[in-house]
Image (cartoon, rainbow, N blue to C red; front, side, top):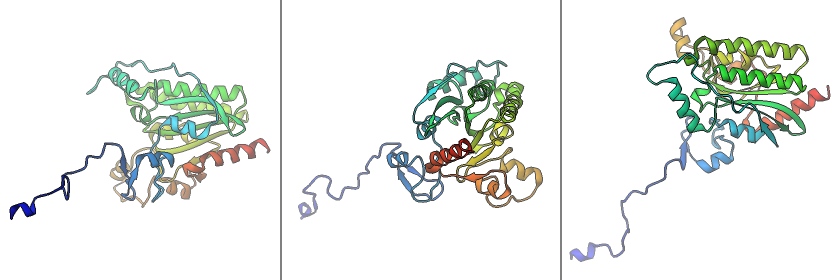
Length: 279
């Protein structure tokens, strides 16, 4: 009788677990839906259920926006000027991050075509030490501003940063003044600067070039601020408003001009450039 209950086919009603390769599916932190990674990438990192914007690389932003482009100042890289030591040597952290990302710094600067318009574009990379602004990031931003100034081109900076890089101390903080002064000169001579804020844009980046655009755009739900909400809450001793420091909150308070979905960013920027060209 025991033979009656034995399986005649292997695997029939088996409880063996299927092994799913890592990275194939991603859970949306906003709506908790599971998303197929390949489809998410095709949708520019936007959740198809709730429109949550995942962080994407600086290379992806460049490819989304520009028809053709050429990178400049790619050779510049930090060299641990203060010989900073903590749990990990800064010099070692730089080497490891460069090897992991294939980039020399937390920003890429390119000149290219956005529609019919030649532009200078700088895009920060959160994967490179949190997109932090060190002396080389500040220098590359400054040189991008200079190139736009010299060639009378619109300047676009896409920010994605945790702020100034603490491992470079005062040298990183000096980049706030340097880039702000460059942008003031650029503005006084009639240059057009469009700032695009993505998640997150915080600290010294927010306190300098990120908030100095002639027009300031932001992606939906992006965290934008100086100090983090937890620090502010502890300092003032009060509960913070719902949505505090998110793009929608800043739009309501007048700190940014418009919120633009990533899928509409290229079209929106071209419309802005067309308007100012024909002004």
